[in-house]
Amino acid sequence: MAALNAFYAELLLDKVLRDFRIKQMKLEIDRSLQDRNKEEFFRLTEELKRIS
Image (cartoon, rainbow, N blue to C red; front, side):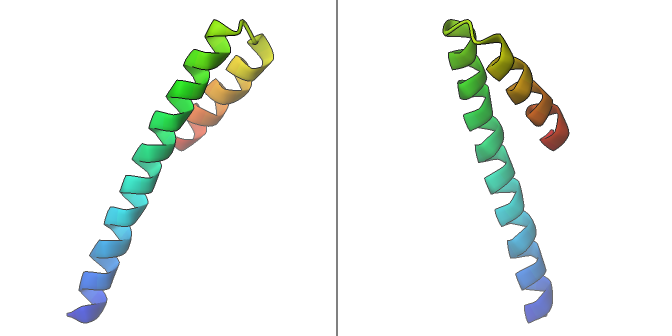
């Protein structure tokens, strides 16, 4: 039972970290648009596609 609880805790932590990273990336994408940084925008959107 303890192993199962640890497994679920790890899944939850992975999801929370992934959701946080996605939120941060979206903020960075918005910033790249404001700065008109085309290269950064494309790099970030590609990375976001990979992790989503």
